[in-house]
Amino acid sequence: MRALPLIILMVLILLPVRVQAQGLFDFGGEALSQYNRGKAAQDAGNLKEAVRWYKKAIATDESYFTAYNNLGYIYGSKGYHAQAIEWYKKAVKANPRFVEGYSNLGASYLESGKSEMAVRVLEQAVKLNPKSAIAVTNLASALQESGDHERALRMMAKGRELGVPSIKGDAADVNRGWLLEKQGDIEGAISAYRSAIKSNASNPKAYMNLGLLLVRREQLNEAQSLLEKATRLDDANAMGHVNLGYVYLQKERWAEAEKACRKAVQLDPKSVLGWSNLGLACANQGNRGAARAAWEKAAALDPGDENIRRNLERLR
Image 1 (tube, helix red, strand yellow):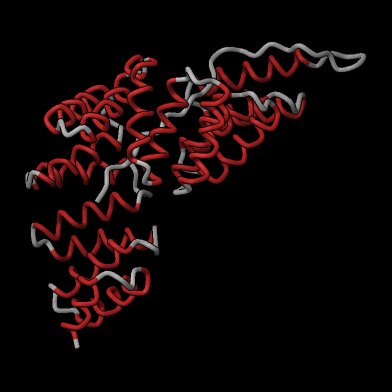
Image 2 (image 1 turned 120 degrees about the horizontal axis):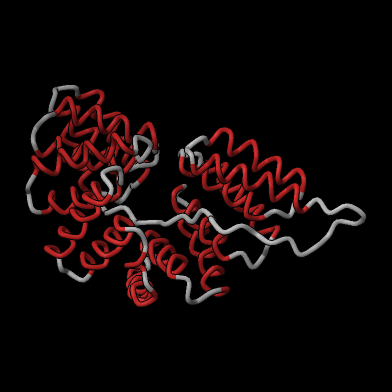
């Protein structure tokens, strides 16, 4: 099991400045007005109206990169990461030096499980602005996800030096918890994750990361509660359901473990852990056929896993 990386998205608040007239008529003022209406709607929580006005701004001025960025933010905040990626791509195409756009694009790649693409995009963001704490922090998360833990730690430390703690409470605390955890300060990490939850009771990563640490400490009751909360807040995260299923297995709650693992493999059919744990849940309920089917899926995905192979042999 692994903790989920933190990614930070930026929605622009500052209004852009038009620097180029368009022939005989300057439509910059009209696009700015449409953008402002979109931003006001977004700030008021009326995202449908915000999307409408941002698209109007783009129709008036197709180079309006901040409108593309904010559209990406809206779609990404609703879990539509594929659409968010396309909007962010348009933002950086309209302005190839738009650091926030690259940072958000990398974050969306990471949310979509495309860690290598995230690293490449976020490296570009950091290259454009080595002092962007958010770009550096997002790169650290992408490096962690891609397996380059040593460089991830260096980037996270750099992010802290640049001012990551100044980012709104829960985001900063999750970053701090992740760094402390990697440095072996588990007590400090637990404290940071609890602080993140206190700052924002709707941050699924804080619940997930804290739950995983408590699993390691065999504090299964609180871990279960935290992971259940994390999956309610982010039902589309396959690893969240895998981790919750693992806790149910440890507590011998076989039917609930099966339900969680089935949800995990539905979301991510390539999850070896999901299929393997599903097999355990089914086997412990006496459903040998379902267990065999699950372990065969797991074995096909990871032929070298000895535990899965032994489990299959026991069913013969």
